[in-house]
Amino acid sequence: MKLALHHINIILCFVLTLMAGCSGKPTGDSTSELTETVWTARHNLEVGLEYDNQRHQMRLAELYYRKAYETLKDNPSQAWDVYAEAGYRYACLLYRRGDMEGALTVVNEMLDKAEGQKDFPATGRTGLLSLMAQCQLHLAMPEAAKQTFDKAYQNELTVLGGEEKGDFNLAIMCSNIFYSLFEIGEYDEAKKWLGRYEDELLACEKLGIGDSALIEEYKGSVALYKARYLQATGRMGEAAAVFASIPHSQISMLGNIQDATGYLMAAGRYAEAADMYARLDTTFAAVDSSHTTFDKITLGLAPRYVANRRAGHVAEALELADKTFAAIDSALAWQKQNDAAELAVIYQTHEKELALEESQAKITIYNILAFSFFAIMIVIFVALWRLAIAHRREVIKNRELYDLIQHEQLREVREIQRLVRQPEQERTPGEQIFLRLVELMAKEQPYTNAELNRDTLAAMLATNHRYIDEAIRECSDALSTNAFINGYRVDHAARLLTQTDEPIALIAEMSGFANRTTFNEQFRSRYKMTPSEYRKAAKT
Image 1 (spheres, rainbow, N blue to C red):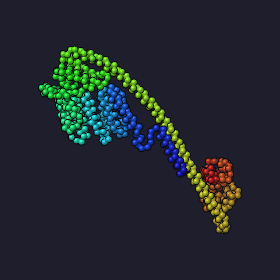
Image 2: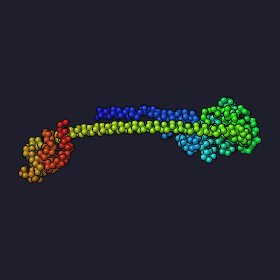
Image 3: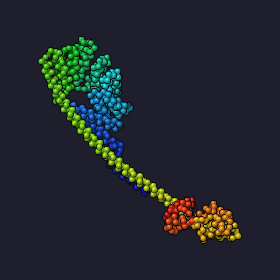
């Protein structure tokens, strides 16, 4: 039995090793088992970042961000950092192409999973809440957006350790919230965020956080926001004074130039706005790509044309109109070419994924078949082993029964010998009849006749069958004369089973049984085993 268990352990180890090899996944601790999933997600995130950095490859960037996000979606705890960045960027691209509901769905799913998770990046929550608020604004949910902006701000303060001021990222966050609320006409709420923006920026300047030139530019941003806020709320004189106080050096970034032109256009100062738009040609935005895009037309050429036309600069306006039409043709051609290239890459990627999935499906099927085969082999082996053990136990039990039967038969012989040695005058009438019956059975073997019964025995002994019944009950373990006769028949069959190789059916007939069924029942009742088991036990 110990040897069989040893063999089972060896087979199980072999099967597990084979399964590990077939699956193509590393074995060992739980960390290594997660490596493939995390690696796949991280790889997709990096590919998405590459397309994102190239710009104008947003379909591909979104595709790979989504793949990275969905790879970890069911179990983000494998790599919270990858899950947080991929999901946030994926939601941002959904927002960028106008799918507000899709972006909100992703953001809500991520925030639900991030709840109570210490490993989820705290700054990631801030970004998700800010994006949620932007989506809510676009879905005409301003009150919900205001509350969400406050949650994002409070979360970022918690990340910074409290109410301390002087964080540049927090200043930019307040700036973005102000502009979002200002654009939809929520001026009172926007004013609150403008104050926070200015406080954070002044704290950064005081603490020496950030480049001084950059601080100056953002101070210009604060002033421009104030001017536009005063202008929007009808305080034109104050707005003009604030705008006039802004140094020229503080209006060089693209955002500040756009805000300045926005103020000048709203103030009806079209000639100054046209000059301000001309400055866009000297910014990095004019040379950040070799391709003309609709964003450039919208942010640069079109409003510059309007400013020149309203300023009466007819020649400049016509020239800009020609440039705008040419730019639109160029943007359309480039967009068509870029879209085709992106779709080709997406199609090729999809084809590769399908081929990989098909290959993995085949490998999975082969693994299942291999595992099933070896599992069946183990089941068969265990079943055979258990049968062998059961057979061995049965053999041992039958041998013990056989020895017990021999011992019992020897006891019965000794009891008869005791009666024979006993003086005749001391025997009871029943003992005398019993000895005569035993002698008859031994010499003439009448029990081999299937018709033998108590009346026949009584006639053979020239006595009444009642005396035979009483003698048998007095001197043997049999409960009746028929049981006594069948006992002799079974014992006779047992001798033939051990001394001959005759068929069992013939032995039953030779022993006085009318049919095989009765023989088997009587034999099992007396010896607690079948005739074939008895024969095997006798030869063991």
